[in-house]
Image (cartoon, helix red, strand yellow):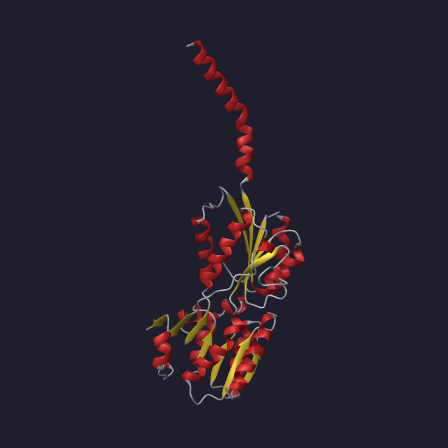
Length: 324
């Protein structure tokens, strides 16, 4: 009996000795994550990102601390917000878009970065397959789909001759995308009219000029700034009776005619998966830039009817979702 008592006392004492070390080990498991967004947390993919982290076992305040900063649509705020996250000594940065990548890389060359953006990501990596360095992420490969979107506009409006192209010049990827769509337009005998915008008021002015230039359809390049303006873009396209296509389904959900591209929710989910891999010890430079393999076509039939358009059966048959 005495032996059992001594053993019990030993293990109690041993446990008390080990408690500080156990607490320290548990504390070491707290991952500090910085999130740099362009718009606001109300943009649905951010919720998908958080939900995926929860599914992977990360609980905010328990084993992960998330510091999120948003530029509220003002690109000039990104550099200071990135520096603020670096000062908080986060273990990893998740950033949105080309401008976010630039701000993050200027703020740190030691903290791993996971980016959600569109290609070619030349500012981020040397090689898609092997990024090297501290950065990796996911891309929507929007430029590779530019010609396909133009072709869809042509199928919808057979007599199409003049297409307005609306994009944000502050995103360096957009000039690359415009070159791609120029190549496609040439093969289809279409004339492009470029409209560069980087503010809500510039969008209003661009639509006035589109009407003056007698544009017959509109191709909008997706980027974080445009993502924050999808409702405005959808409303103005309908008001000006312009058949318009965008890269993400949020545009069609907002009343735009149709959208074709990668899912923003796919991008957010796979960015979270990369966060998990890096927190578990993976070297970001060894993780290839992940590209989507499937794309969604979403058509707003209600908007088509309001524009007096009949969606060809060919497009309807391949649509992933039709909004009525």
